[in-house]
Image (tube, rainbow, N blue to C red; front, top):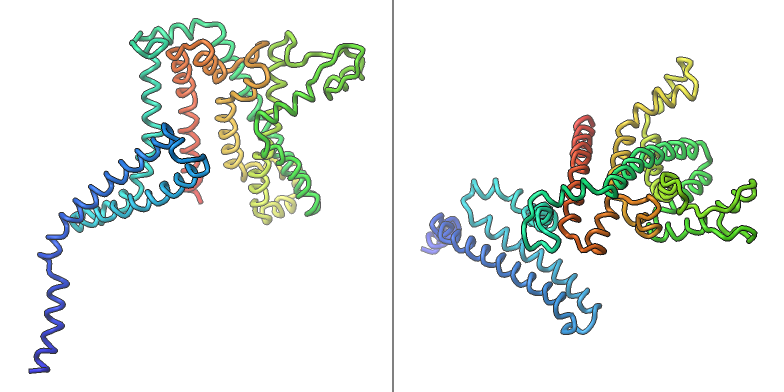
Length: 385
């Protein structure tokens, strides 16, 4: 009896654990609990973050709000994924296995949709509305901006920025990367640190630094601006460099600031690519009698072409959206206006929301092919590895 009882016990336990009917009964519960849990968590987090914005005084201080935001953000994400996992596990086995990878990236896609995709479509919608977005005016905003000489002047300036800045940044980055590679280890670190240092400076700070370079004092006074000091030492009269009549020169002087900021970014990526060129290809070229200049153009450059394109496109997109340097230095005056600064002035200075959003849509259409090309190029690079 004892042996029979002890032998039957495990079989009874196994039947209880593996009962398919019990598993089927728990599936609807998991689905319901998981779904309700996700909805309640999102609702609670939404209300909490709205309270941070509308009733900050109820939380005592900004430090408390910051700490609560971190705890609620991290903890809330963990709770959402917990209930999401419960919901997916409650589904039929085949559906659950196929859905799990997509379920865990769903919150990320939802956040991107909320923060990027929805505002994009809303902006396109508002571009067909009037100045305060209360009534639709059809294509009137587009007719207005395309008939505005300031808009076309901004387009020309943007094109000038796009032609000059990315090419100069890439060229300067390649030159610095190659030359610094010839230095000793300590010399290379020092040179690269100097070139990369501006990357740690904000655009506003960079404009303030270069304002000292372009500074103007009346004739007869000591010129504290570096550029005027050099110019007057060569026999010229001091110039108000960002306000002279040659609008294109004004823009070029502003481009120098962005080139100074972005050169370190290009140098780091291109230097890494150059160091990755196989040494045996260089030695083979030298054995074949190629000079260093030929090796650079015919061996090194083709092998770092992918990195050059990546840097070029990245800087290109940055230049297309250039705003802060122009806004802080001239606010678009003296023939230096660009699309992003024109949008800002239309929206906040002129209170023309319809025209401002139409300008943004034009900028979005200009950026989209570049982003598509960069993604395609990145995928091709990954596929060829």
